[in-house]
Image (cartoon, rainbow, N blue to C red):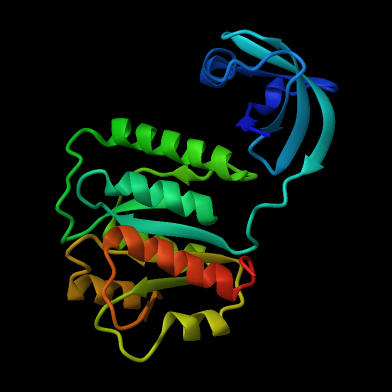
Length: 245
C-alpha cells in the first residue's frame, strides 16, 4: 500500500485531504481512483489507513479507516553531520541514510571539502529536503527527516558536543577505539556522527572535534568513501542498539 504525508491541519475527525504535489502525484501519475486504499502519515508518528473518496490533481480527499502509531522509527536518534562531497553524492547520502533510519542530516563545511555552495545554499537545501521526503515515503518512516542548512565545522562540533548524548567522528588515523567498542558502551538516545569529505578531516579539525567532546573511532582496516562511511557508521550503531535485529 503506497504511503504519503499530509499536513496535520488537513486531518479531520473522519477524513483527511492531500494537496499540492502529493495530490498531483496520486491523481495524475499513479492514477489512483476512489475506493483505492493508501497510508497517510502526519509526519509526527501517526499513520492513517485511508480509502480515497475523491481524487483530483488539486486535492485528494480520503475517508479514514484506521488510525495507528507508526512503529518504524528507531529508538536511537542519529543526526548525520556530512561534509559536502562532490557531484550528486550528497543526494545518495541523504536518500540511503533516511532509508536506514537517520533522523536528521546537517551538511558541514570542512577544510578539505572541494564543494562550495556559493549562493546556491537555499536551492540545494530545498532539493535535498525533497529527496529526504521521497525516501521517507518509500520506506514508511513515521517522521520526515530534515536536511538543515550548511554549518561551519567548528560550530557543528560545539553544537554536537552539547546537544547530544554522544558524538563520534570516524577517523582513519584512530587505532584503538573501534565503533563497535563505542557502541557497546553507549547508552544514550541521541547520537551525532561526523563524516568527512573525499579528502577526509584535517588533523586540526579532529583536534577541534575531540576538544568539543567528540570521540574518534575506527571502522576497520579499509578506508570508506564519503558517501559510504555515514551509511555504514549509522547501520553499525543502529544494529548494535537492536534496531536492525
